[in-house]
Length: 290
Length: 290
Image (cartoon, rainbow over all chains, first blue to last red; front, side):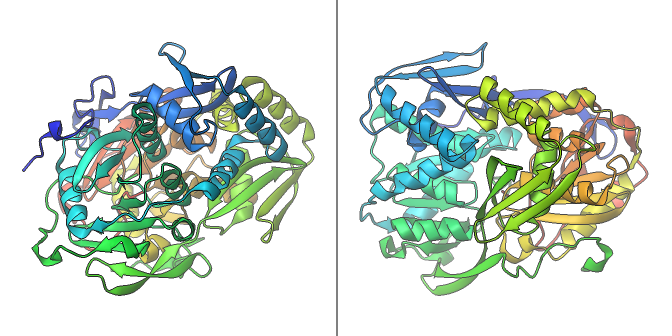
């Protein structure tokens, strides 16, 4: 059974228009074959006058990606008003204009001071932002988890069409709302963060489902978005678990068929589903691939 | 049948000593369970006096990771002599000392000039290095591919022990030589690059097998290492294929059981194996997970 994508506020771009390219090659028998492969483009994100980062992306929702990245890096303060977002497809740039020049200038001073490279700093900034995070007491029913996994895995997605791509899905209770995909799993989450920022959507009653691993960075981004539950088909890293426990985020991984592991925030969970009545997975569907 | 890891020059750290941590959680039935999860630590890499990047790594082979990263970023010139590599476990730093101060200073000027962030620049530097790359006319037998996939998939690895980790394996003909794993697939490749640099091993007669996707960055790193063949269980990105075709690198992806696709450099291939005699995959083994 295939879910109706119109259940989503934003379904995946499963047609792949402009996001995939057909490439000709040779298969294992030596025969010529044509297959679709996902696009991967550099997108340079500017905050006002300042170049911040060049992300590799499939290229859909550049404005959401830029907004979400800057927000998750703490470079856009909460409530800071965004005056505009200008995307230039030809130059592969997106410029986010705000009235909060002081904030990014301060960040940039810090960047130069603490690190020769944004990777280190950006990470430092993210950790820093965690101090203010207080995640709400939400409840999480296992029946929701199984319903979400079933719908998400059966939704026609770019992954099912071309592979080599990650998906993140913003959900509420048993309903998937926004399904973003990207070559980088962080981009998919940042695009959701950008959408939430633009639409003024709160994270407190949401669940984030991702196909990527539950690394420290994924946990931090989710916590900064105010989302108390992070679920993945893939596995954990020790630091990801540690941070989740520190900020009180419910962390569920290795979710395949009826099985999953919860390594943080189990107090939110309500075991209301009988795992033995969950059909084991069959056929082509998303695997926790990178 | 499990391969004897002693066939390897460097086998995986499959015992996970110091690389995994046992964490207690609740499973899908609500029962308490303990599982091993991989460590993920920041490692800040310095080149002489200059902080370059903070990488997230499982933490084995920090010296190889630092050397390989700097080499693949073009921050260590070919033939530039490394005076020493100092790893400080407590400070989570590794300092690479060279006599080529001019080189990194020039790189850093460029970094500041072209980009506020190393991510963008580093990428620019990598592309730049491609001009000099000339990959040798090697041959690649499909019988080697099947033999390598079988051995690698059945080698006891940290992935099989704890999941959530990528592997890259340096191979020659039908023999896997060096098997590195890391939370970041690029780290695994960089650690191999660092080993090659330290041991003065040439890439021309080698094959790189990776569990990660064949993105532009993976293809570029492989080309910069002088390795003419890159193989993965996972899929392709369009730009990865484009760059592979530009530099004449043989790119093979989606290799599962008897199946694979070659989207670049098929001229090196010799179809000497009968795919129908290749056993399809069974049981627990590496999947192209992230």
